[in-house]
Length: 479
Length: 97
Image 1 (tube, each protein chain N blue to C red):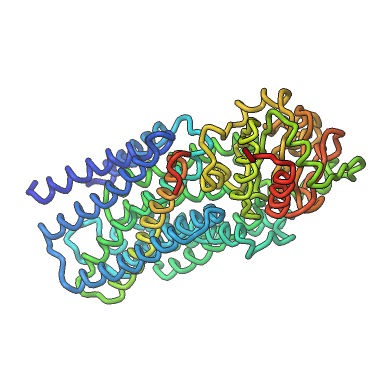
Image 2 (image 1 turned 30 degrees about the horizontal axis):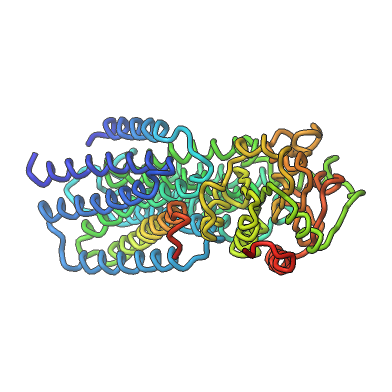
């Protein structure tokens, strides 16, 4: 062992340790921000380690340096700009896009090694020299391609660029996906048999498989899918580690893959869905239209903003239930103004955060934090549920399925068993909603029919703005 | 490194990953996902290796460079976005912008 090898070993070890601490720290509120920076530092450390290793051994020629610099600058610049510019509401799509690019990187590495033999002195590093190399290249391409196309489809669906095509809800999709899977298997064996051109077949069919698997999945399940694809990108990185013979890549990739799997599991639990039903069950709305869950509303009470303001003024305790509609309307700042007024009048305001409110777990927390809502006022479902009976007014803002009592009462409902916020226990419930359209699941919300529920129709931002006006007229929030 | 020892590395890395995350508050699901996602951009090291070992092979240099670009897009963007999200949680109600 010579010096560069030892140095690289120490740096790699340190980087792995820091990355592990980073992931660990990211799962606690207090340490999360530092942990993220620690992980970023570990990543840069690993680059320094690798480059200094090559400088100390084979050297890095000018041409390589030029391409390294070009690639780094363009990639980092676009990444940084997008990360700074993107609005908080589009976070899920952004994560999906980043994730897809990680997958793309793995495909390219594997393709590069497969197509161009590299003379590097390392025996494992030759073009298809061993079976192991072929397998790891194939896995890299397969998983990388699924990650890439899957993430891009997820992003397009969240952005609303893509809708769920009807045929993907029929059984046909299973057949189509099985065909793709079998085709990739054939390409894989063909590749191992020495037919190098089938690598392109592998690229194409695994890309199609990624699309075919993600396309049928409906909106509410998207976060779970993104989390799963994130886990895949870890696996892709690990298999790229086998391709270029790097332990660091394998460890980091395996950690992300495993941690991503756990996170996916945690998210599924929050929605009371199993991973299998998310992946193969199709979108929830498609099933429910046929089920008993849908039906006509019989007892809708609609009320004006003025009535809502009057009730709020008389309240002692108000719970806000935010949902995706709030994010769409970008009404978080307006909401904050309303609650400020209420607080100035001595009314206790709390925000009830359902684990899957919005399109991504934690979506609402991010959104409300952006509007300077104090962290202490955000209550998780289990904490806030016992409080509803003692609450005067609940404001449901753009949330729907997460406040559907069907999940508790109606065992025939597709939502049955999903943990929900017990808003109906409160004295009065106001639901601010644009129309009577169903939520993500496409299921009728029994809450809207209850006698203590009133609907305030309108865009969340507009209604809240009107509410501010009404509250002002009532003298709320003025000392 | 022999293949077997690489497999050991894979196994231990996976076990470590499984152990690292136990209970995550829902608030942190998104940042954790995006932070882990940034780490999966570690493929940038593989891209670097590709470029260094290309020895003047231009197509390979280009593939490596594009791969490096994609990976760094993932890494840099991922960490920045995560930081932006987490910054919002840590902001105290008193020190408004």
